[in-house]
Amino acid sequence: VTYKIGLLGLGTVGTGVASILLDPAGRNHLLKEIEIKQVGVRSLTKTRTVTLAEHYYTDDLVAIVNDPDIDVVVEVMGGIEPAKSLVLKAIANGKHIVTANKALLARHGDEIFTAAKATGVYVMLEASVCGGIPIVQALKQSLGANRISGLTGIINGTTNYILTRMHAAGESFESILADAQKLGYAEADPSADVDGFDAADKIAILASLAFGDRIKLGDIYREGISGITNTDIAAATELGFVIKLLAIARRAQTDTQNSSLDIRVHPTLVPKHHPLASINGVTNAIRVEGDPIGEVVFSGPGAGSGATASAVVADILSVVASLKAGQQINQLMGCNHQHYASVQPIKHTVNQFYVRFITRNQPGVIGDLGTCFGKHGVSLESVLQKPVLLKTSQDVANEELAEVVIVTQKVAEGNFYAAIAEINNLPSLHKIPTVIRIL
Ligand SMILES: NC(=O)c1ccc[n+]([C@@H]2O[C@H](COP(=O)([O-])OP(=O)(O)OC[C@H]3O[C@@H](n4cnc5c(N)ncnc54)[C@H](OP(=O)(O)O)[C@@H]3O)[C@@H](O)[C@H]2O)c1
Image (cartoon, rainbow, N blue to C red; front, side, top):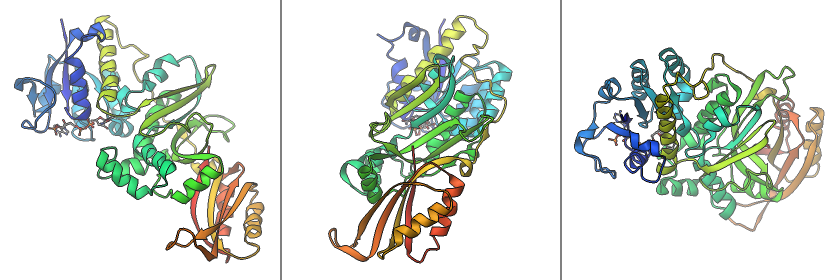
């Protein structure tokens, strides 16, 4: 008996999956009992890099999810529709699902998991978050004994690649982004990565696994990296930090009931000795804190054909092993969340801030800033004042303006922004180019 796979999509990830399934030697022996029955694609004439006879291909993806011979549908086509309808149809037909589609799960996970529960099938999603890093399995099973208190991750390779290069070479955000697009690290429309949408999808999935509740994507605070300049990178470095786009999910610290979550994606100043500060390039990493484990850090390739396929095929193996054992649904492999988590609005959180001001170059400016902050209970940790260089020359200072970088102590966001509102009205202020939270 062999277990039959219907593959929806043969692009970057699908090709990696097919390559592993067609070459089982030296891998898990169970792979010899798994075979591809059919591959659904958009174009039947495209040249493919895997060798599969013509009869494997179809552009009728509905036929795949209706094929009674197929045990597991592997959805690696991406997008919301028709992926969503195909997955729901496959579930209704009693097929198990393995998917890499974070966008679909973060938006329609509730409907998909409810349907899967009703028909008693698995929806496996290891590949949907952080490619090859086995974080989903870790949260569902290996760390299952822990009370998880927080997840902190670099879970978008594109933005980490851009920020790493800004730190290393002082190149501008725009020129590195253009390069990343040429190298295939960034999409033609970079918004999903650069504006933090992709990281928000992933942290929604991870938070729901870690904390056992469903997460509404709209509840997640999200800020991207396009406002980060080389001036901020230089100032952060001088202060002993590295700027990273972090995705954070933790029990809300200001909530005494401890019943709500604090989930956000934003650029963050990370102390340079923190384990996440040295995660560079397209590498992903996630730090998990729990009781009694303390802290574990997972890192590795967050995307790419082989790495993502490694996660997809591991999920196929888990499903097949469970089917072979004749098990009912193994609870540790499923998702049984019923309720939505309460997520704390960012304005109710407590954070430490880095703020860069451009002020008029006149006496008393720092005093004015200090007075506004003091009035709203914001204590300052450090103040750095620098000349502002003229755009036309690297070395000539603009006599009229000064740059002031302030690092606050931890403060309620409400108080901090009340002070900023007042500072915005100071005649000595020119502008506030950047505000970045500190880890
Ligand atoms: N790439 C990564 O490193 C990575 C990492 C983690 C997760 N993922 C996720 O994995 C999924 C797939 O990504 P990918 O990079 O492999 O995408 P991709 O290279 O664009 O491949 C998509 C595949 O699906 C097929 N397809 C798409 N829409 C179709 C439709 N309407 N009808 C029939 N076939 C259709 C395409 O057919 P044709 O070949 O005929 O065009 C192609 O084979 C996405 O959900 C993505 O978010 C990707």
